[in-house]
Length: 454
Ligand code: UD1
Ligand code: CA
Image (cartoon, rainbow, N blue to C red; front, side, top):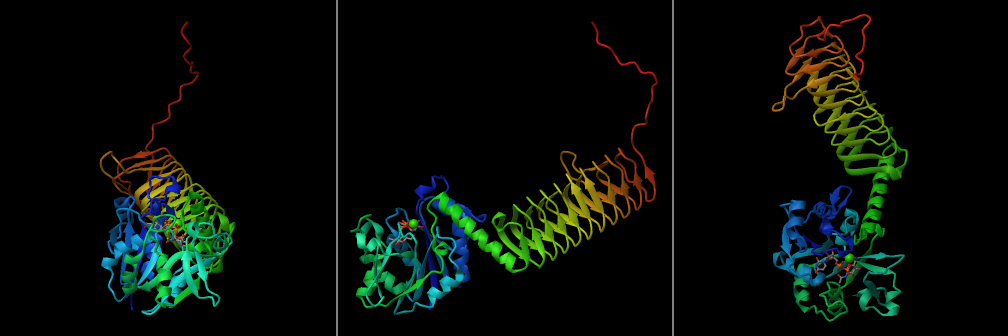
């Protein structure tokens, strides 16, 4: 049977104390709702319907996904009412899987396991055993262990509240049945809401088997209601990611002090020191060593590269054997060829640094192309911008640029040229020449400094 996913995301999230709709709060750098949508996509659903209400426009724009159907629930009258809003869009002969926009970390394996337990004649329910079930609907089973009903905490008796098996809210059910049952829900309960959970008792009354699947961990079905819960889930998620990396041969100075906000692919024998942040798509080659407080975003780091403390790297390609940092900043469009070295307080932007070339201290190299074995002295600046347009600096193989040189682009420096320290160059340099463009030194002997007038 075809699968259709309904994601409930209309609630306000009062306890977040935020102007931002709850489902847009980020976990691992991505809105909660985006985690749920991307999981739903991995299930091969024929359609995904997202029920939005509070901040509907903001949610749609932020998630920006045109492959899902957005359904607006004007008033939040309960989970049963929310699902009902999506029903006109569902085909009768599909299975509907209900997920929640604020339950971000359910594993695809768990959801697939749940979907194995549903068909035209039965319903599947994801439950969880909880150390502290406060706030959850309780699963009521009969003496044979068959699920009979879900009772919301506010409607439960003292005895029922002792039950540790909680309702995750996630369930899978034939759409045809939901279409029959939802109009039969009432608001005759403690919260005056249409409870989706009441469909369980209706199913049982009709003799439909309820297959309960128990989640592996509490965290994977944990909803986010407060910033504290969000922080706890973030740490849990990050620990899973750290464990995955270690299983692949990465050593971490402290698994609790690595943050991954995206996709990271790694080779073996990598060392990552404390407080490293990896964002977007990052690929790290064998033997790479990453120092403390390093940020790497959307970059490729080749084999044997060393990145020293406090470097910030974005949209860069770093070939094998390079050394970067400490305190280096590689901005988008940086490409370091094999064995290049970028030292402290150096900023590189949209530049190719050739094989074995070095920019060791305090320089800005932007819109530039450097050949092999170029040496850029401390304090060198490529003056790439005239206030309106950007211009390119081209430096050929073997060039030596003395310290504190300003290269006013557009400019080309020929092979093996040498530039004297302190030069300001605004025209091309011939190969194999020495150019010194600095003021001539004047020496005045026995110079008397001015004295203060009385
Ligand atoms: C719900 C379940 C409860 C379960 C718990 C797990 C019901 C009646 N209760 O309770 O059994 O243990 O989740 O966390 O289903 N929503 C809408 N529109 C609405 C109401 C809710 O979109 O009109 C969305 C909310 O944004 C939220 C989700 O549905 O993402 C759950 O709603 P919430 O009010 O938090 O339900 P709980 O009381 O937690
Ligand atoms: Ca909730």
